[in-house]
Structure formats: C-alpha cells, structure tokens
Amino acid sequence: MRAAVLHEKNTPLVVEDVDVEAPRQGEVLVRIAASGVCRSDLHAQEGESPVSKPPLVLGHEGAGIVEEVGPGVTGLAQGDPVVIALYGPCGTCDDCRAGDIPNCWSETRTHNMYGRMPDGSTRLRLRGEPIAPMVGSGSLAELSVVREAQLVKIDRDIPLDLACLAGCGVTTGIGAALNIARVAPGSSVAVIGCGGVGLNVIQGARIAGAARILAVDTQPGKLDLAADLGATDGVLVAPGESAAEAIRARLPRGVDYAFEVVGHTPLVREAFEATRIGGTAVMVGAPPPGSTITIDSRQLFADRRLLGCTGGGNIPARDIPRIMRFYQQGRLDLERLVATRIPLARVNEAFDSLRRGEAVRTVVLP
Ligand SMILES: NC(=O)c1ccc[n+]([C@@H]2O[C@H](COP(=O)([O-])OP(=O)(O)OC[C@H]3O[C@@H](n4cnc5c(N)ncnc54)[C@H](O)[C@@H]3O)[C@@H](O)[C@H]2O)c1
Ligand SMILES: [Zn+2]
Ligand SMILES: [Zn+2]
Image (cartoon, rainbow, N blue to C red; front, side, top):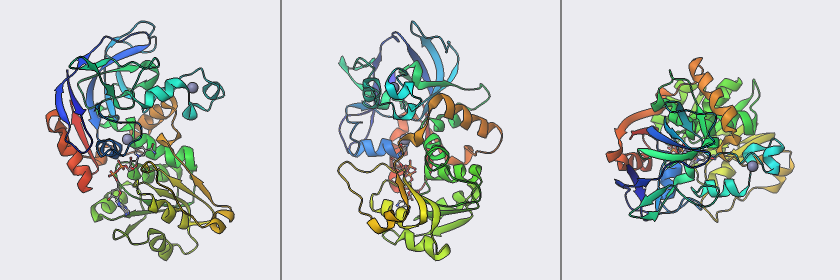
C-alpha cells in the first residue's frame, strides 16, 4: 500500500510502498478514506515532537472503512465506517478503572503515543524494516492496522472526509472548551490562534453558550471564518503584538477563559494575562520540548487557573459520537474547516499550506 513516510526531519514526505501485516488479536485493518493534516504533523516533520520521530508514517486525523478484523474484535465488522481516535485507552490500568480514561498512562498508552502496539511491535514494514504509524494512526496512507480501542464507529451518512477531522482537531478543540475549561453559559472566551483546532474551541464555546467569544489571529482570513463559526469579536494582532492587551482593550477585566491554540509558548503567558481574576487559561497548542512558561505568580495567586490539554481530555467512545451528533444536528460546522481536498501523491502541499498558515484544513484522500 502507499503511505506518506517521513524519513528525516525537515525533509518532504515520500509517498511510497509500505507493507502491512494482517491484524492480530484485538486489531483492525482500516482502509483510510480521508485524513486531515494537523499542525502536530508539521511539528513532527520539523523535528519538534518528542514522540513522533522519523522514520514514521505521518497522519493522525483519519477516517475510513473496516477492511478486516483480527481475532477477538467484537464491536466492529468489515464495512463499518470508523474514525481513528488520538489514542485507545488500555481499559485495565488504575486510571482507566477509576474512570480517568484521558489520563491513562499505561504501557499500552505510552506505546500508542510512539505508534506501537502494546507489545512494542508495529504492523508496518518499509523495505523489510519496521516503521511506526504516528500515534498508532498513520492515516496519511491507504491502510492502517489500529487497535479496536482506538476506533469509533460512526453513522454511514456522515461523509468520511469531514468525519476524519474528529480524529484530532475537532475533538481537541471541542474538548478543550467542554471537557478541560468547562466553559459556562454566558461567559467570555478568548481564543488565540484560529486554525484547525482553535476554530473548534470557538465552536465548542458557542455550543456551551458563551456570550462573548473573541477570536485572535494574525491572519484576517482566519477571523472571517471564526466569525462564521461563532466568534462575536475578531481581534487582528501583528506577530509579536500583545494578545492580552488587545483582548483587554475590549474586555478590561479580562475574560473568563482564554485558550492558546498556536503552539508558541510565549502566547501561553498572553492567554494567562488575558484572564480575569478567577479565570482559566488553557494551553492547547503543543509546546516545543524543553520550553518553559513564565507567569506572574501574583496573578496566579488571584485564583486563576492554568491548565494543560492533551487531546481535549477526550474519551474517544464518548466524545467522537457526541461530536458526530453536534454535526448531524447542525450545531457543528465541519465543511467550513476544509479548505481543499487532495490525493495522497500531493500530500506535501498540505504541509506547505500549514507552514504558510493560510488555509485551515487540507484533507488528503488516500
Ligand atoms: N493539545 C492537543 O492535544 C493538540 C491537538 C492537536 C493540535 N495541537 C496543537 O495545537 C496547535 C494548533 O494546531 P492547528 O492544527 O490548529 O494549527 P494551525 O496552523 O491550523 O493554526 C494555528 C493558527 O495560529 C495563528 N497564529 C500564528 N501565530 C499567531 C500569533 N502570534 N497570534 C495569534 N495567532 C497566531 C495562525 O494564523 C493559525 O491560524 C499546534 O501546536 C498543534 O500541534 C494540540
Ligand atoms: Zn489505562
Ligand atoms: Zn493533531
């Protein structure tokens, strides 16, 4: 099968033949129909991911059709449409058993992050050598072998080239608003960075009933989209300009919730400084390894909260069906997030587009 392989950091992906083994116990072979390209794919390509290191089959925002199930798979059958989640809970560790599924930190989850099965193996071979699929998904490929726990079955009437976005960007953005910050009705929200993830923080805040939603970005086009998806105010900032000051120029007391959704660590401080006393800042952007955040401790003392957010605190079996229902009810716009659809052979164009920062999501159709 054809797959987009990252051989070395800062080099273009190579679309080439990769061998796939049959699914084993509890595993499923998925024929990928569509995959979004997220900034975390770009971070991996630029060598800024501590877990997704080359050689690697990139992609982690995929949806497809079950082609074959391995022994012991009970919840899925050939022909089922599925979204590949960001992770598959182990189901047996103390955290999972206590219900804290997003924070499962078992060996299974660790291997999953590095793109390996629970025993450390992979079902992919490149010229005879094992190669990992990014976070166990590797969706920029024609096929992927995924643990059943990492797959969520969806209704047949949902287009797979939209459903794929629930693999990461939509789930993370909606989850940051609903699961992590728990945005309250009538509240004020600022979202710094309105790309594939940030626009979904905006949609999540709208669904939660926020009264003011300030969209902050350096690109005017992103603010237009943000307005269509629920932002009440567009705040255009120049790179390096203080987002906190721009937000406080509109809401002098600060906002109830502020989200950093760029992946640029100094902006986490801006988000924090944009919150009111008692407010909540959430770092959604993936910080480069080794980076640190400096905040004014007196401001934290004033009952503020600064929260992390891996994958939007999502439980795949709960959150992906919920997102699909929001879409079916017309409360969540997925179509507006897709700028272009391209074949796998042109995958590098999606990375160029992310680097330029113009478009939201390019969806690759393997
Ligand atoms: N927490 C998680 O689990 C998780 C999941 C997915 C993605 N991410 C991370 O979230 C971040 C965003 O991902 P994405 O796919 O939405 O990226 P994206 O490139 O689609 O969006 C980033 C947006 O930030 C804007 N921007 C850049 N500099 C800015 C600045 N100084 N001020 C305001 N806006 C600015 C860009 O114009 C763009 O609209 C990345 O770091 C990604 O790795 C984290
Ligand atoms: Zn677990
Ligand atoms: Zn992602």
